[in-house]
Structure formats: C-alpha cells, structure tokens
Image (cartoon, rainbow, N blue to C red; front, side, top):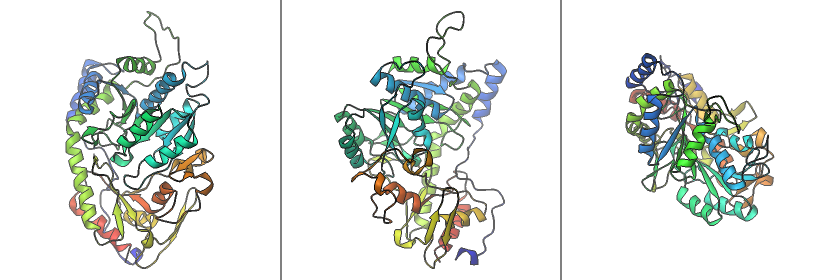
Length: 425
C-alpha cells in the first residue's frame, strides 16, 4: 500500500496545468501600457482576434472577458434565432429545453439557465468521454421539440462531432460548440470551434493557451460577430450619448489580457506537442497496471490538454463519495481515484477528480437526463461499474486527472508514475 512507501516530495509543486510564458506576452503588455491602450480597445485585441480566426479557420473571432461570456452570448444568439426577441426581463430560451453535454464543467450549461431555459443532460460515451450520439438520438425521440444542443469537447479530446452534427441537422437543431478545452484539437483534420452554429474557446489561466482569463466567440457570420461585439460592450447604440435599446453586458476582453493571448498564440502547436509527450509517457508508464488513459477516436487529434486515468472496474477498491468528502478502504492490488489523488498530493503534485456529471450536481439534480437506453433519471444511482447505463457516473467514480503541466520534467513525471504504481501494490 502507498502508506508503507516513502517518496521524496517535490521542492516546487508540479501543477495540473499552469501557464507557460515565453516572453512575447510581456512585450505586448508593455506595448499596451506605453501606448495607454489599457481598456477594451487596442491593437492587441485586434491582432488576437485575427490570429485566432486564422488558426481556427473561421471568418470572425470576438475577444471576450472569459469563455463563459462567449458561451452565454452563443446561447443568447441561438435563443433569438430560434424563438425571437424575448419579452422584457426574460431570457431568450424562456420555457424551452436544451440538450447539453452531461460530463463537463458547469460553465458549459449555466448559460442555458441564464437565458431561462432548461437543460436536459445527455449521457457520455466511452470512446471519447463526450456526448453519446446514441443517447442524443434517444433524446430527440423523447423530446422531439428541442432545437438546441450544447456540445463540449472534454479535456482537449473532440467528441464525435460529425455524428452529432448529422443528428442535429436531421432534427433542425442548432449546435453551440464548447471548445473551451480543445483549442488546437481537430476532428477529421478540421479545427474544433468550427463545427457549431455558434462556438467558443477559453483562455483561462490553466488552458493550453492562456491570457490569465479571456475567451473568444467564433463564427462565420458577420452579423452575429457584430451583434456579439455590441452586446459585450453594454449594447451601446451609435449615438454621441449613452443610448441603450436592449440589455448588454460588460464582456469585452481587455487590451492588456489580449496582449498575453497575442504572445501565447504562436506557441499553441508547441504546447500541444509537449502535452502529447506527457500523455504518451503516462501511457507507457502504466502499461502493466489495470488502468486506461482517456481515449480518443482515430478521426480526431486531441490537444492533450489534460492526461486522465481510468481504473479498471475489477481493480477498484471500495470508495464512497459524499457531497464534499470521500472515503476509501485500501485493498491489495487495487486502488481508487481518492487514494491516488492523496498519494500524488503527498509528494506536492496536483491532480483532480474527473468532472462530476451535471445530472449528479445538486443544482441540476431534478433536470431530465437521457442515456443510450432512454430516460436514465430513475436509474441513475443503480449502476454496475464498467457496464452501467450511466456512463458519466461510472467514469467519474473510476477516473482522475493527472498532473499535466508542460513544464513538468521527465524525472518528475517518472516519480508520479512510480507513486501511482505503488497504490496498486
């Protein structure tokens, strides 16, 4: 057992995924400072939008304060297109349901609530840990009036977005593509962030390219891009005074933050290559263990933002999770995410649990939830590890995110691998 082993702690913490700076970032921040363009206009914003659109392969990119802001405005746009202008003090999705990825960060789905809609969560499939196309088909059978689908690409791995696109087209549904974690990843050699009717990426502090914060709305529609720019600057009309005819938001990216992103963007491919080496090193180091790495399909090229681990069902020791705390019982030859996370934390390295599925979250626990077999809400707690109908709950129970910082040395990663191996002894 791990408790019987002694491993030297890292002097400096090995992070899950921390920013990697190169120097150009400071140059552009300084440029903003020296030219006094410190607000939400300036050359850094213009260049960052241009560079991002060119990398993604879309016509327009609008720089916003965070990925969540981008997703919110995606949702607002979709609601207006589908259901028209809302009444005063109502969201654009008032009274309407939306199919959403279940195993994701809540920023993917919260904008549906912002716009007064109701999320219906679609279970996860095992090939990519993303939205299950089979469950999505079932959802349209159960809820044929739904016309909007929110799809997230988890941990930098594209979902089966080609299949999902076909299903949505067959039902006249729009797609909001949450590519916050998958910037630079491709599906059939096409960049994620181009498959949605409205798409978003994030430059949060731990993302593969960062501005410390920030996000981007992506589109091929000039009209949509202009509308998002207007909404993101408090919906000010073209008057000499402050004239407002609709609700707006303070969502525009700062020219200072844009300077960081501008300096980061040329290094995206380098960061992806570094992350892939980390993933492959883990995969090799765990060869003889009863575990698997987070999977991806042949059609996709992930950005490998986070390397994750899934413990085989027969190698799971007993583990119980409450709302805040978890307990486990050590067993010879077995382990669990809680034990492994405790073990790597003891040597000053950071890991995390897999995203807890949205249908298991207290705030969304009464929302509908659809599996490949149909309405799964009544059966969500009655699953068998590895073969359950509730795939997202199973992956959450058996999975964890490993330290994936691209500044981690091979020696540091080897020690983390050794610690994890010891948990199964």
